[in-house]
Length: 383
Image 1 (tube, helix red, strand yellow):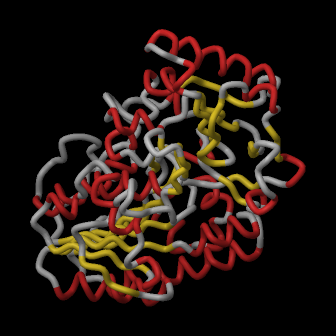
Image 2 (cartoon, helix red, strand yellow; image 1 turned 180 degrees about the horizontal axis):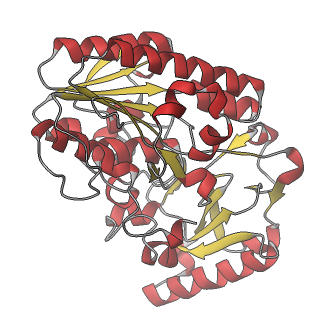
């Protein structure tokens, strides 16, 4: 699990700094991937392509599987899209960029903020809510995002992909062609190419479904097209933001009401819940720490030890959100975290049926969710 992560295990956040270093012919400051010098890079972000899933369905993705070298894996936590994308594009962990979960409790406005679709200018403005500059903003290189038109003006795009030219492509195959074309037409290109189709199929049908496998086959064909069209001096990396666990209605668990005493909000993911205490009940820091410990003990007992239940203090001390997280990011982390370790998803009794429909889930600390492939192609391919 994440709390046992080796210090030398590479992170998703290391990818773009390594790419920029390869474009300069330098060794990166941290997380050295050993990439050769290249004129430019294309990084393909495949939403939901966990390492475990690709290994299990390797026969349906021959281009990816043949190129994937043993041990080329990354850690991505929190194992959710908003955090993974932002860690990739800023080169920082969630404690630095602040997108710590799918949804968080905004203590100032006393409301839940959805970091996929809940962006607005009244308290969650993309330019300020996401706390770190992107690699596209920091580096003087030709940068492009290749994704669907529907995401072009989204809050998450403006928060986490700012600084890059946006290029619209509606299918995975079209996006591959556009990414290769951009790399041909620019002197020092850094291209981020995003595919959401696998994650969407997994949420709706589960990753073990034929629909998910069909999207994987389409992805593999698109990657083959990208390799065929990209210039020879362009390095290509295929990565992901998280893996996935299939959950069923029978494995949905409601946190008992009696365990939620003093909790004013429950946010996060079904597999990693963030629970927030009423600040009015904790007048000083010592009282707040004690209240978090008591709440975690109560919830842990109510769940019969099935989940990993930790306080915010423990999660930060264990480095889940990186070293020395920004105070604004800390405020967004739940006082108590409920992390699924089995194939379960956690809810409260008052959560509507509409929130319980997804089959494929992610967000927690298991290897199946936090471990993603790093596949080297093009000028980065290894023999």
